[in-house]
Image (cartoon, rainbow, N blue to C red):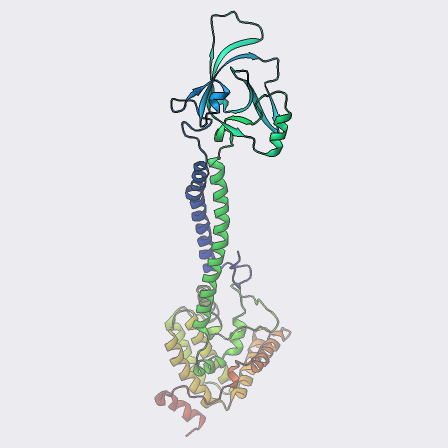
Length: 430
């Protein structure tokens, strides 16, 4: 559907919810079309037809006078023609006037008139007591309620004047009325209404899904987008990794293998349900971190414990400290830390970083050196492409207007004298 998210070959949880919502909207729209709109259209069309008793074309009743001659018909209004007829079926019983078929009716007074008849409302009575002839039936025909009408067009009038099978030329006898029209098909109307409403539901549902999805994407992006210089500075300590991690799909594959470039997010990803699941999966798989307690214990070890104090080089220290803020960012995306906890705990590590390195360049170059050494141990036969990618990511970050490396190195992050004292001793600062 139109609201598919960024993971290649993967439907996110929200996509599934929106898809079910869209299906539900279509079902509701279709039901409304079939059960409400369709019958409404049918009733509207039926209300435009006059099919009630006593209407033109209905079976004759006592509500209208009975006539048998043209003079009686011309008195005006509706009537019931009761006509004595001798059916000679070897002769023409009617003809076309302007592509419309009219029956021919000889009246008692000798007038021959063209008529439109609702045959289902016609009653006949065979006259008995006389010898039957081979080609003749003697019967009394009671026709449906009728009325004299003028011809529907000038062309019909011209054809009627030229016709030799009728003697009454002014108009015709309408005994069909709306009964001669094709009546609305309720089931067909309901089906068409349902299909139309399904289409409307699809379009409306897609529009709503797109709006909802955009709203939540914006909300999720803002939830992990740094809002202050303090948050941007903290993100800068692991921004190279964050750019890489942000481009990993749910299978751990890069969506853009060449120099990943994405928005700067705390923890590397938008704060949505699928990012949370993937981040927790990575923490468990790559770090053996299964919960908040494991994460905080690991960060403590790497930033203020043996993991940091046993470091002998700057690149070792960068490797431990940058990955500490990285883990805290991942803990935020995993839902284990609030934003306030993330900022507070990351600021403690950030203070250590500020007092351990001279500037952004020293930190980043030390981190990239540590990454290159780590890759060499993990993939000794590698072609160096991963290391080149991380260096390219760094260059891309330096060129961005929102680059955290444009912030002052000693940006105030909040101080903690007790926690910072061991760092002062180690680095020889006063």
